[in-house]
Amino acid sequence: MTDDDTARSADARAGYAAQVSQYWETGGLTRAAGSILGHLMVCEPAAQTQATLASALHLSAGSVSTQLRTLTAVGMVERVRPPGERAYHYQLPQDMWVRILGTEDQRIAGLRALADAGMAALPATRPDRITSLDQMVRFFEGEWPRIAARLDEFLRKEGT
Amino acid sequence: MTDDDTARSADARAGYAAQVSQYWETGGLTRAAGSILGHLMVCEPAAQTQATLASALHLSAGSVSTQLRTLTAVGMVERVRPPGERAYHYQLPQDMWVRILGTEDQRIAGLRALADAGMAALPATRPDRITSLDQMVRFFEGEWPRIAARLDEFLRKEGT
DNA sequence: ACGAAGTTTCAGTTAGAACTGAAATGTGAC
DNA sequence: GTCACATTTCAGTTCTAACTGAAACTTCGT
Image (cartoon, rainbow over all chains, first blue to last red; front, side):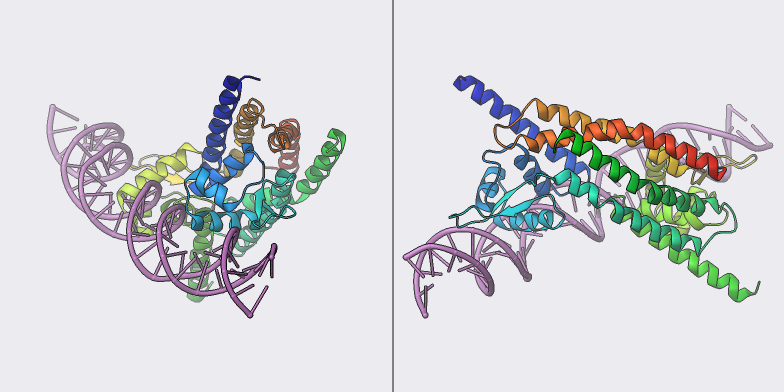
């Protein structure tokens, strides 16, 4: 591999990091959180310290600490300490996407609560405004376990 | 029904409107958009003019106009003009939730684009950072049509 | 136990999105 | 065609949440 190739792929990875960052920012995460996730998708090595992240992404130590804390809390980042290293290193968990999907039942539960509250305050006209929500939630309460099972099967077949 | 009952249920509906508003704000919509959606869930009549919404929700005409425009664009609000009425009226579509679910394939397509871009910039270490995304997207590309079909069946059985 | 390195916390600042209000534009009734 | 009503647009303002920087705190190696 030539130096040129190396430079080109580094560029490509930086561009991809920006794209991933953009994706998550659109999805409601902060700029800092998006940048961290984008960087962690392609950086070498895959696990980075807070100091490395801060300097690579031009973020303050405070921002990095805060964002890593929340990203770790929701399972999108994993904190590890390599043997003999002083500082914690942060990386994307191997099963990030499975974890994210695993919280789907909590989102369904949130909608269930909303539907139940609505059924207790049904308007006289167009009650379907509420009942259609209830209906949709009932569908996913029944369907999600099935989807989760199929995902397990899919991952097993893929050998993950 | 007594006056007391009427007052109580009006309170209940107002409380529910706030809860729905809260839900959508948490989900990333603006306060104004959330308020409108909450109000439209329980208001009488179910279809409201911009002027009514503005005064009921203490929002400026500009905010109401802007938010209704974007909510209409994404299919969460429907604009109708009752015969003989001057102003447009805005209401929740009967099939709001089906519409929202109907855009799921666009979200999957967005993730597909992200996965493809990533596969073109694979990092040397932990390539699973990218491939696991690709895998997850492949699962849903295969699964979503099946889920949509089951939703159709579910709605048919419910008589909707 | 001490010192150095790493992390967290938080008061203050900044950046940017949401909202307002009023002017401009559009629309329907007569 | 005109007028009144309705809606949109947008420059200016307000408000909120993100971010910074530095001090406080924690942790680990010696």
